[in-house]
Length: 265
Length: 125
Image 1: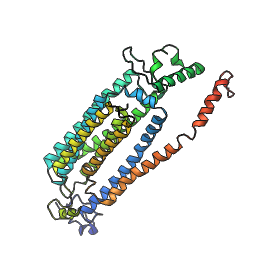
Image 2: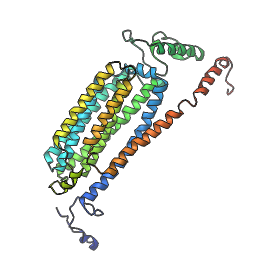
Image 3: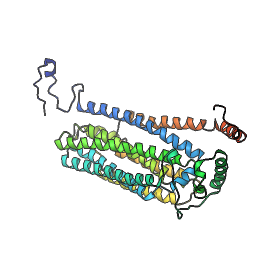
Image 4: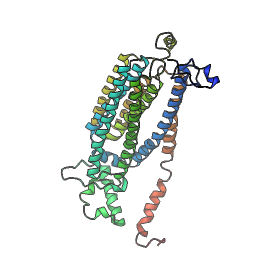
């Protein structure tokens, strides 16, 4: 596995007893691995802080408007959320398995487990696509674009707090002449004011998470190509491990998103 | 952790290979906990539902971090780095929550002021 020492630089020649995967500025494969590992952990720290902004928005809005969250939760399918949770957990298993294969120099197993992970990621996004298209079709949209019209059969039980809130909303609507109150005020009566806030938060959190899945799929594809080429071995499995850590973080975020968005009330 | 040094001597080099049975056990535990959290969400736990869901999610997250992310075998410094992100996240959330009621009285006052002034045109126009 010694490199092709055809470069004319004389100062390189003395270092060319290192394997191809070991960069020049590292003494040993282990040092290279540890450096990359610290780097990916620091990156994951920024990711956690990145998402913590959205979680803070969620917590503050839920504190002020619990009725919106209780109402909007009825429009989220627990079954699809559960399915996606299982898909993502399974993909985390195959990703961890892939790291194991890379460490044990099992090339076929590595390609297989990475491919399964990629398929799971794709399946997650397909389920997400059905969820999103259903919400867009129903008008369950973020902020001011929220224009959901309830079906006749789609009623839900009112709590006392909601009822009180609706009276306040109705009074406010009379004063400010909100347009939606004109035609369908009896239909919209059970929709709390600013229900779109929930869907702003929902689409931001799951959307950003979905973008992370997309990036993860890109990285996993890159790993599959390199694994098939036989780049990885027990001395050089860093890239598989780093992408794995990123992938587990995406899973970690979903572990919190699922109960916070789908299992309210 | 004491046996981690022994791994340097075997053929895996510096790799800490996670046994397959641990990976599978963690996966099935995660699926079980997911089912548990769906079940508890359908029950009424007297206002403790959110707390319970977050406890279950944290147990799941800990399992993922310890075994899938290999934190149990990782360098202590990496553990410290990663855990610190949650600490700073908690500071972020904590300070925001401390501040959340600071402007509530102004909103209430403004709402009260709005009632008589809606009849007159806004001064900006």
